[in-house]
Image 1 (cartoon, one colour):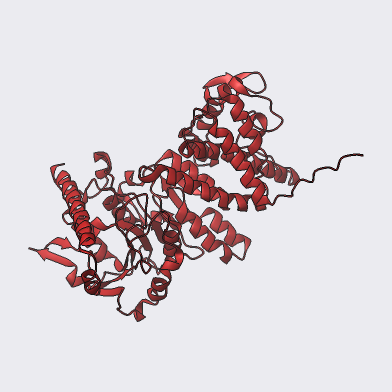
Image 2 (cartoon, rainbow, N blue to C red):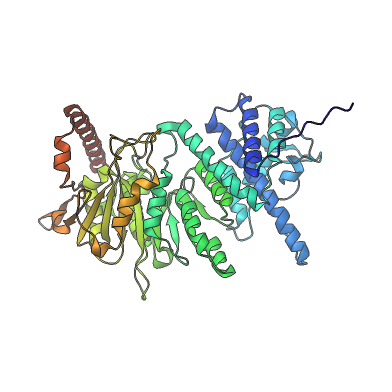
Length: 521
């Protein structure tokens, strides 16, 4: 009697892809050259990036052939995925490592030539601004950390089963990739790339309400959270091929200074459907801001720029002499102000939503002059104060979201203090902020003309924020406390108040040290 065949379960697309990527990561765990998720995800990303490019090139080549047009490949043979990584390739072991790692190596066909990574880093287009430059910039920050060419071959076999020419698979991969990004950030802890929690991103995009046809910028885009959320906000609004083309090619712009996030954001946007991301590689602060003209300004800026760091002297020289500082957050705030579109020739005034550290609100000296320009030339209509733990575990620094536009000077600032859920002292990694926590502030935010003060909301006239002496600003204090907080403060335990006072003292001391170094520079 013939034994019955074992029926294999039919896996959904999500299950199959999750299993495939898990298997690839499990194989990577066996390689001594990789150190946890901080190494595995970047390695997996650049391999997936090359598979994505090859699948995209196959589609473009078929379309060109059907249309009777010449096809100019982005990546030539034998550097395409199908040539060295696909199932038809047998290159493995030391030969595979040599082909990837070395400047000069034996190629899959047997001849000698440039190694894979060396070839990719040298890609150039005729215009100097094509997709070749995107690939070259991505791979300038890439290295192969795997030590076993045999384990690497096993990983390639797994990834060859991922099909980027399937919209269903790409949609599923985008969610899997987001979860992998979170894992990497968690593994990095407070030493990792700064991470904006998705509920904060969703909240800022919802209130900024990007429109089709607008230009939207994140000058410190990291792994692309704001750009992805904005794309997903706008995509359902597209009803014509022309509108989709505008969204794909001339709506979203970003810049990232570090090679690893630059690679990760490219993959993140591609997986979410943005096929032609306009992303620059490099530090946004290296541009001389006094030379920024109207053609370089945008309708909307959504960003969480880095803070807590210090910029080099050469970067400080790109800013006006009386507003030079080494504090990254203050430099980015100036850049953002210069980049927001002016209401010229009947255009709508540009606007911005920006995450800033709490210390920026009360800092004086150079910071006061920068903030004076903000409230004098822009309408800083709203500051949403976020509670402790929102950015846990990446940073304990309290943060705020500034909402401003170029409609005119600030007459007064509305504040909204986001409360913690009942019974909670702070948000944590295990009990984080969720989008639903923003419900009340979303209902209150618009229309601005009908806002009312309450336990969480209050209004401060600009006269109570600015302080002058002999015609010069000496203070622009945006750190205005909730007048309804007194009763709550009185009921808090003394030990909790002492801890908060010590934290505030340390924060002030750090700001004073930065200001001292600025004055000595």
